[in-house]
Image (cartoon, rainbow, N blue to C red; front, side, top):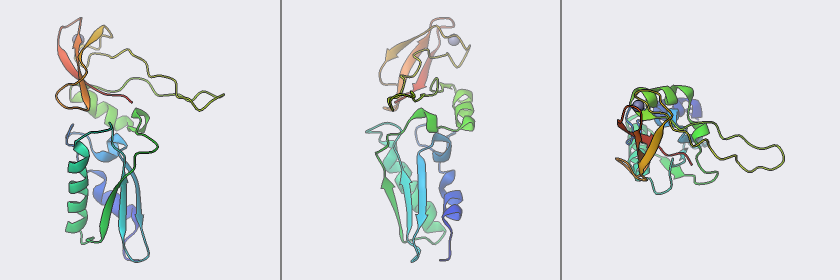
Length: 166
Ligand SMILES: [Zn+2]
C-alpha cells in the first residue's frame, strides 16, 4: 500500500461545495469515509445534503479530479444515501463560515431520544444572518438552489437563504 486513507482524506477534504463555495465537503459532513484497499483502489464515500441535490455530481467530479492529479486513477466516489445526511454532521467551523457567508446555518442539533431512536425535530426558529433576529418567515421552499430555501427577516426586511435541514 503506497497511500493511506488519511492522506487521501486530506487530499479531498477541502473540495468546495458547489452550492456554498466557502464550505468544503468536510465542513458540511458530506465526506463520510475514505478507504484504500491493498491494491491501492481508493474509495470515497459521500452523502448528499439533500436528496436530489444536483451539487453531488459536481462534487463527485471534483473529488475524482483531485485524486487523478495526485496519481490515484484507480478511484471511485460512492454515493451513500443511508444513513441520511443530517445537519449535525456539519462542523462548527462550517456553521460559522455559512453564517459569515450570509446564509443562516441550520438551527439546533437533532437530539436522539433515549427511549427510541427517533430524531427530535429541529427547532423551527431560523435566525436572520444579518441582524440575528429570530423573527423570520419562509418565502419560498426553494431559494437560489434546490438545497436552500428563501427566507425573509421581519425585523430588517432582508431576504436570505437558509440551508435546508433534513
Ligand atoms: Zn434581519
